[in-house]
Image 1 (cartoon, rainbow, N blue to C red):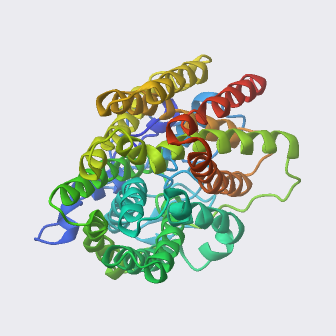
Image 2 (cartoon, helix red, strand yellow):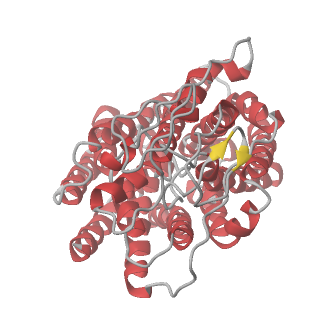
Length: 473
């Protein structure tokens, strides 16, 4: 989750503008974001330029270029971040466009960018997704205290997003046939129901099913977002959507911390996401563009398997910190409210790392540098005995983790002969696998050797990732 990561491919021209909605509604809160998602200015024209209709511009076609470079692959990966996962299961901007809210056949002439209503709905959904995914860590620490149960026994509550991503990898293409706009509305409603169930009680008979609804709904948003934002300049809009999600995610641990400090159970902070999600659920159904017809072919199993494993490793490292960072801070002796607030350092570092990462994400040394920074932060977290040192370590690690997933996704979608549908499914499956496995493994280690030592788990994962990344080059 964070501001857009990309290279020249993220700068596809899209010079149209949209009017800002007025009124004291939830839509106005996200008005500027909706404007940008509907079609913001771009820095660089694409290879092909469509005729400019009056009052709008539609330059260039988004999509998977034939024989794309690493620059372009990394640009398509701007939508990626599992903490932020919203974003992360997408192979890249697809072909086709939306014109006045109606579908234009994929692969046809380039049309206008998605209208403002599409941008507004996506903004609502991404704000809710980012806030709730970033709530996993504080929620786990808080409910373990309320129930007086070991954290490792409850980590499954925060793993449902991963399960949802695995499910999306299997049934996603079939679900999207009903329309990405309808999927988005239903997802917002489902997440609202789940968030309320998790917030109002620590009773696992209610909170447990609630976490399942939140996880599946968040995965559905991650699946539907790119389909709604396709068209000229899609990469830029998808990257902005991920940035909105990341910004909302920074607020979650702060809200948890404020409530815990006031003596109120932090889980009530989950209700903060409900209004914006309801706005997305009751909004009229918007329409996206169907995938372009792609020739059927055999998946290049070897390269695709390596791409899958690289994403598993990068996302696994990220979610070790997302789920267990606050708990590690609690172990230094600070109150849960303080630990939740300090845990925001991870989201801030991720956002900053992805902003800076746009400058070097396509360089040959990018993975090595990111791995080195992440390992340095992890070591600081291990040796830290006080909250200030551990917070610093989490912040440093987040700067290194930030560009890893987009780089790995860019490598995946650039595999020759791998279609966009296949790469989307593989990316979703890899993210889900990592979110299910890595936090659970760290939780098991917490029960065996303690959380401080368990936090060394990312180091071997990073070393394997570095080895595989070099092999890919």
